[in-house]
Each structure stands twice: as structure tokens, then as C-alpha cells.
Amino acid sequence: MTRVFSDYSHEFCDNRPNVVLSDHKSRCEYRGTNPLRKELVHYRIDGHVLPSSANKKCDHLLMNLPDQRAYFVEIKGSDLTQAAKQINQTINELSPQLKGYSLEARVVLTKVNSPDLRASDYLKLQKRMKALGGSLEKATSVYNEKL
Image 1 (spheres, rainbow, N blue to C red):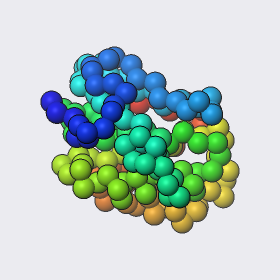
Image 2: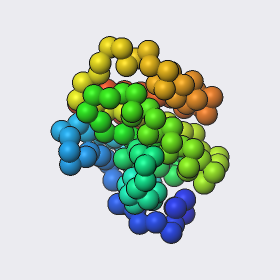
Image 3: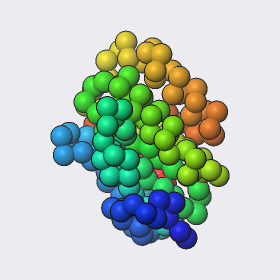
Image 4: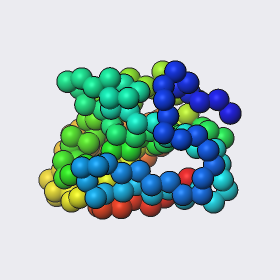
């Protein structure tokens, strides 16, 4: 399988059984299990695939190549609204290269403030992900999922 962003460095491209994505500023983790050992590619986004700028991007892009599923992952403190904005901005910039992929959004937070769940940026991203054939999921501290 070919990588979508072949011009950019990737963290890994293999069929490992477990994936753990984190951020050095947080104790939160995204954990994916890959029991069928599908080929996965992981990219760091903000400052790597996409240059850092005033518009912040999400932290990670994890791609399941055989299933053509792309997971945008943001590890955040407690600002769910900002996380939604960052994922939305990243999708805006990378979606042309991801034609044919189902897009998923994942946010892992240290805590979720109750009013954040009704924030317009979060609700807009939730609606957008559904229209793209995916979903927006969030968790506190650790998010586990089967890839």
C-alpha cells in the first residue's frame, strides 16, 4: 500500500498490533488495537505535515490503509471547543489528499467542561463528521478503539 503523504515523514508505517498516541504536554493517550494486523500509517500533523501557523492543527493523523479510514486525533487539556476547531482546520487542509477515505475525529482530554458539549464548534464538527461517513468521539484521559 502507498502512503498518502509520501513527501512527508511519518512516525511509522507497519502492521503493529497496538498503537499509543500521546502528547508530551499531557498524560492523555489514544490507544488503538489492530488485531487483524492491518497496515497503519501515523503522521504528526501540527508543525510536521502542516507547518505551524496561527491556525493550530490537530496533533495526529492515523490511517488504516486497507480500510481507507483516517483518524484525526487531538490530545488536549480541557478545551473541547479548541480541539474541535483544530480538527476542523486540519480536515479543511488535508481532505483533498484523503479522497475515498472515511474520516474520523477523536479528542482525548484531561477533563471535559459541561458547557463545551453544546459549543457550536463542537456541534458543527460532529455534524460534519457524520456527513463524511465518520464520527466525532471524545474521552477523558484514555480513548480505546479497535482499528
